[in-house]
Image 1: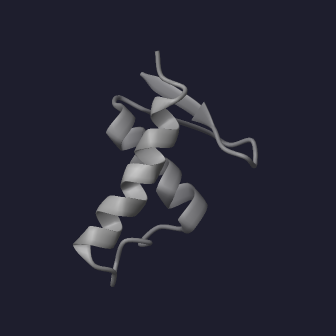
Image 2: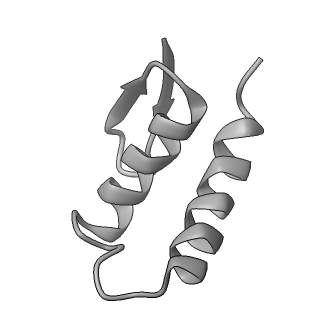
Image 3: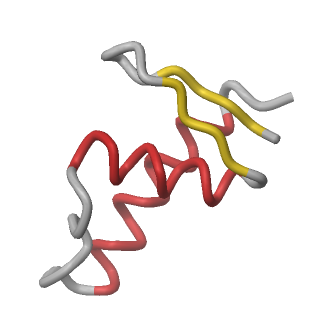
Length: 58
């Protein structure tokens, strides 16, 4: 289980880094942030969150 603390102090947990990155994006950008944008933009944004989460994974 991977856990990260968001800037507002909320702890988020998930089984994988990808799920954790998705939950962090939902938390920071709001649920549905990926609706109405291109798949390329979704991939780019989630990739940035995945890179961020990866910095803290062992």
